[in-house]
Amino acid sequence: MRKRAAKIISVTSVRRALDEDIRGRSRRYLFSMIVRTVCFILVIIVPSWPIKIALAILAVVIPAVAVLVANAGREKGPAPIVVEERGAIELHRSPLLGEGEFLR
Figure (cartoon, rainbow, N blue to C red):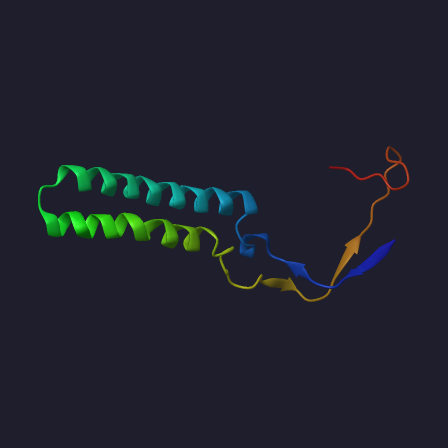
């Protein structure tokens, strides 16, 4: 039995997996929170008032920017590449599988 495929898409052109995307955004957020903590510690340690004020402002602004970056959504990659517009897909029936069962 033969069936017509609408299009075949190259796997190498697919966006990153959702797990990887979330992991990357979490790392960026964690890094910015570490930088914020360092800014707070430096506010206590640094004796110069202008530098203290700049570090305090930075420590207050970083969380808002970090949340915006973390929640920006998935990356917009290039559209998937269509390898073949119309191809033939052959369906193979296996005597080991029942009706509606799939091989994983």
